[in-house]
Length: 407
Image 1: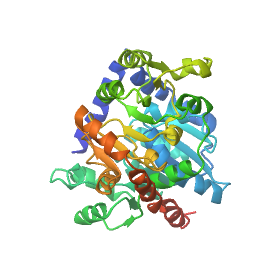
Image 2 (image 1 turned 30 degrees about the vertical axis):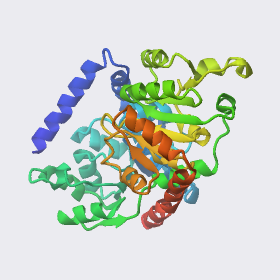
Image 3 (image 1 turned 180 degrees about the vertical axis):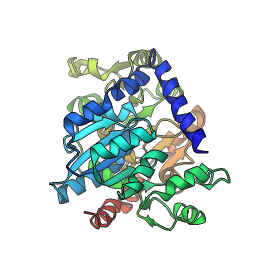
């Protein structure tokens, strides 16, 4: 099975290089890894030990960030190195100040794994939620470096629990300890004879609670919202945006803020066509805002979404018509109910919020209208959402306390 895994890695490398000739994200993926070990050598002293954090993308960074920052607070002399797999994480957080170095993670080959471990000289490696790499994990194991997975979550349909998943079970065997989100994950790991797991919950709750407790003041957003009801649509994709455009036409008394997942010029132009009463944030910010009367604000930048929810009455979370919904907790932490598409089964918090009456899943415009009306009749659903988030905090302290055993 390992030979198939290695072939898959090489095939992925070939495909991504082909795509890089015409796809911006693929180009960043490839170019960011070019001469990667030269870049690392310029910033990282291999004779000094580091705590290595790896994140798949921006979402996982925000999820693991509370652990990283509390570790740095408690052990200020420790040096931290960060790697990302995806450009959407690296390009946004490449200047994060608490790390000695931030890099793209080279593809998982034996040679790359050996060079990375030698270059980083990690005393501890922390991966967030997922990304299970055979050669990196094996090399850390051979190097006797503790490897922790935090905020991990497992489902029965994953390859680890299939008869043909022996290689992937081997990958899990290299992990020193798992901190998991739910009891089901504990049971699934035990079913394959993995006992080194602790139920800690999800560190995202700590992150979003912290964000909601100290919200950023956004003057331009405040000016746009005025005293009207505001519908925030975060991390949207085209199918989400089409539904919201129809809802927008039916509710001229509402204002809408659309923060798309992709902010490329062509996509922003498509959104502008969907919302003729809309204006981009970059344009609105330069106008005489007191003289404008736009119904829709289209966010054409990255990094603002987590603060936008403070200005909403209700939130729609995108991705539910694709591979899965994005972060519902950022909105819920601000005490507003959430709506999302039908693909949410991988997200425990989405199931919990629905059960509590603080969220609804929709599949069409009629359901979206009903959900918007039902969830905004009273303040109750929003308050329930906020209480749910704050009741789930504490994972970060638990994890960092455990990590102190290694430091």
